[in-house]
Image (cartoon, rainbow, N blue to C red; front, side, top):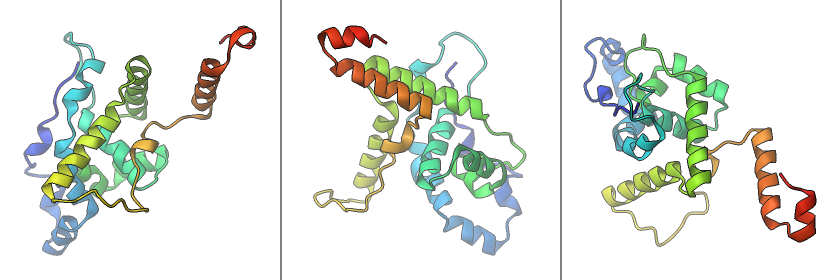
Length: 195
């Protein structure tokens, strides 16, 4: 069941920020994670992913903006999944970036993020629409407008997150290669290599 995440909008009375000194709060407010939480996280359009979930009453899933935010951070810092979950579990800055201000709160499981990615991939295969790229493009357009940035000149060292968002395991990559090969084979050759 899809449920929009709004819990992050109200700060917790006993959240991790309440225990910080003035100097620590200054470091927090100057951090990349704080900027991510203020500028990117609230603009992740969760409703784009709503149709991937059951409409019947069931247990709510992990917040979509946390899942997408975690994937963006994973690729921003070039983390493995193990490093991502280590940071989500023990690094308060990483938790803060995806709207978790209570250090005692549990995060979603690894299976949850993999299931989410599988749903996104399946949707892409069925419709040709890459939802993560759409969200990323929307975030980029919002930032360009907010900061009045012209895109007439493209930097050579630009950060490409969408090309890395759908990670392939070796098996998934092999299957994708076989699918694409099947599409280009013709006639008798294709009959020999039916997948």
